[in-house]
Length: 225
Image (cartoon, rainbow, N blue to C red; front, side):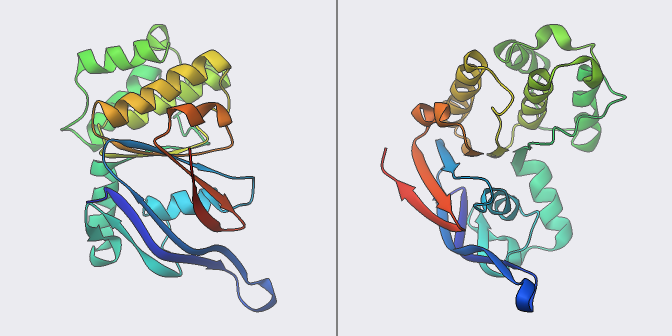
């Protein structure tokens, strides 16, 4: 069973002369234990796709399924709980709270989701892998863009979600860190059985992917590796 599936999804914004169709009859499925890339130019519909996949946006038509159950069959409260428990978001806007140091960013997650998060040892290993273990007492304003991005990645992985949705997670990283993040996402998929979906311009990630999809003008198709 796919961990996440989109079936015949269309997304339209506006009406009349302002009507724009952003996604056209999109079908997509990702299995646990796989890393999938969605590649495409700016304005192709990648971020809209990710918002719909994560339940942040309701499609104009079509359905989204998580672990075999449609979002449509859940109440808003149930969808919110599902995102909290099962989906980890790595967004372009890092959303780190400026008045909390790195350690406290994770403690905040503990307040919202008290159970099922990584333990202290696992978190330490993750921070080591990302090269940010020595930044735990730093505030976001004291970090570079790349460091903030790596903290945001760690925070998204901290709740141990079954599905990870990442929007340009390597945009601010140099090639060495891209290798680290690519290998980390691959390991999360293969070793921990996560379903990882990465929306990106970054072709440096392609070698880590199990499947690659291209999206252009809202049309999605699979690319042979």
